[in-house]
Length: 289
Ligand code: GLY
Image 1 (cartoon, helix red, strand yellow):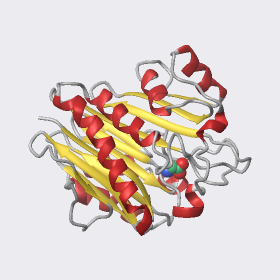
Image 2: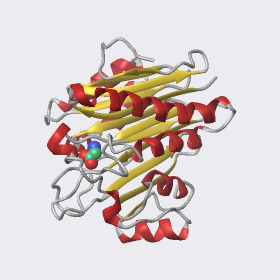
Image 3: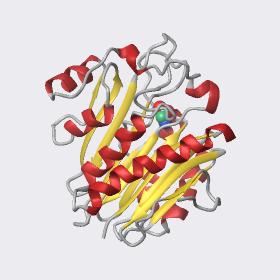
Image 4: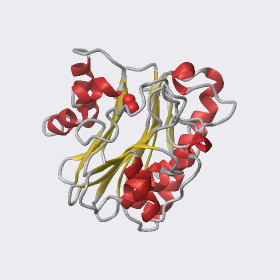
């Protein structure tokens, strides 16, 4: 039994951008499904799905990331597996083509998180693809924050052996100070994964998500609540600081949960029991696909 859920960011999706958001999420889901249905593992599946989202300038991650106050792209990404609690994360990464693959290369290394020049040096040593930092700016694209509010992409998968993996990637916040890091690469804030409890990934206002440790709250809530209720309970805590967010959850028995207080939150899901991808642009919408 395998399952996969991903999101394309807690944000507002203009009508003209709806088809690109739907199609991008579906393509990314299919990349993950392709791995899972052939017996591949959840770590490879979430990496494959996130790479598709990173390569698509519709989403604020990888190519097409937001620009900081200096006009530069600084990206963050993390990957965690729920059997051994291994985490690989990079922050303020410049000039790496797929930050999620650098995070994956770090998964079984001693450091949990490497930032800045260290992240690029690690990527080079690991044989990950480097690029000119400016090559991650999608020409002709208005900034993510200016146009739609900031967002992040995320994915959680469970493979046929019952192992969970959670992944997150973000292009950060438009106009943020150089070196700013949000929730995304911080375990317990933007993501977490435990094969006995489930996986969770958040998107949205990074400072508020970090201050309220939303991923940790979901993990605790899953002991008593359904996946949807656990996300809703975490979002209710966010009311204490304000801020917009959306979260996805996958439990060890393959139950999905998701919720958001942003206008929109594109989500795609599939499982061995229901392999045709379902894609939504917001909670309550009838699925497409
Ligand atoms: N949620 C992503 C960030 O604030 O950087």
